[in-house]
Image (tube, rainbow over all chains, first blue to last red; front, side, top):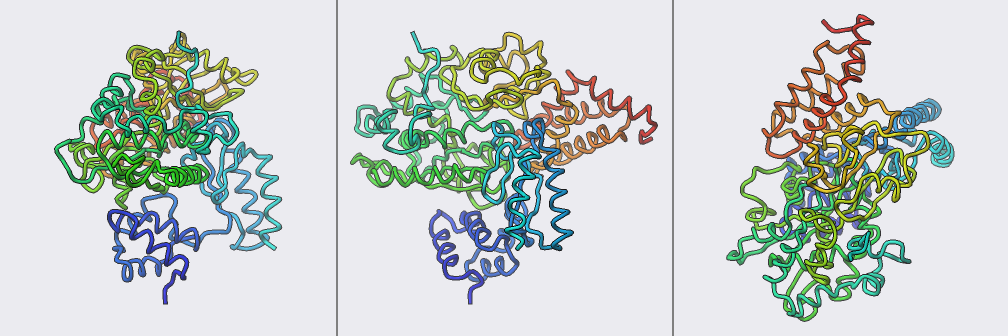
Length: 161
Length: 430
């Protein structure tokens, strides 16, 4: 019994045939697993090793090298907030502080499974919309304190219900 | 007389459905350059010569002549060769390739078919940073359209030339913008750069000849084929011909991506394209070519033109055309910390001067901002930065050292003020 499920299994097998070497498939395979499961679990790495022949050391070094891959459980909404130069100049710091306050309040009310997590992110490549953040894969531009308040107040009750 | 502001790259910007194949074909001479070349009107040698004659220089940051780079692929080698579009665009301050993907992705694809034909590659990849989720969608869609129309795949336009193109997504690592780091990543490994030589043109992806070209560079090629090197040289300067996309951000009325001829006056870009500085703000310092470029003072910015030579003459660089305006409300020491922290985070860890140097600088800056720094901190930063330059496999170490050196040289006043404050408060670490 696969830990991946049929749809994901087919996708993984597709990636393994798609590139010149199986190893080249590691990044796309990990993206696909994470899209479905949110993070890369130890049993995923084991099955990639035993069933698909992707060396567990090769897989783990990729997971730990790149910022996007997570080997710990993640929350429903992952906020990645850009803290680089232009975002910093246009208000990243107070916005990040406000997100922390929101998350602390939500966690206090709902426990550890509060829906949001925050990662101060090295760069998001959208300086003309600074300050910028990603909520999962969706880009939010001009994410200043006011907008943070609106967004998190809007999302929080629906996702936590 | 050449147009004042050429449209070589952003030809479909502002049109309805700018990204669609139909738009590219109807409004931007779409795929006529490959018809010319694959139809036999232009030979492989003529194509390379034309690109060389155009003076096109790599738009990713290094500014290396594109046509010359293509000739480094050993033509006697009959095995597989690869063409990679470096769409990793990770230098802080740069977002022009993202904009090309948003408004004119087909021109990149057509440029890739031409470049692949020139170097005899039958397989190509576009490698995009993960953070560009929307834009990855646009590229995948454009590739699909190009396949369906017969501009990619086997026997393109009946020419006998095959070129398969696939998209590959990064996973959040600045270093994958370095071409050998990108190749490592595409091989499914940590994105660690490789020792050169051998250069990728000889031994790249899977040890095979590989050319890595930036997105904007590739997008120039169809235009050069259609209009010729001579017309291309009507724009820009003698040594920096053509147009360039500039990503400009900071306290401006209209930050964004603008296509202007190389050699364009900086002040004009700020006033005309960007609508000037935000009310009440003025220029404190300028980052002219991404986070790794040495800063310029307002005095040095006077009369500045946007080309490789003008930047070099002021001891800085054009890089990828990433201009960041540091206005008078900013605390430079904080921005220096942001810059160093970025490079410390992104160092791949292979080379000691980079891995340790970026970390040391980061620790020193924590001390400076936290009021616990030693009195000689600024001097120590200068020394550490000096020993980080030119000693590593790739340029990341230099990319951190260069801005540090320029901050320390030109703006040490603010750093010293922090140190003086800490000394007065008696919080120096002995």
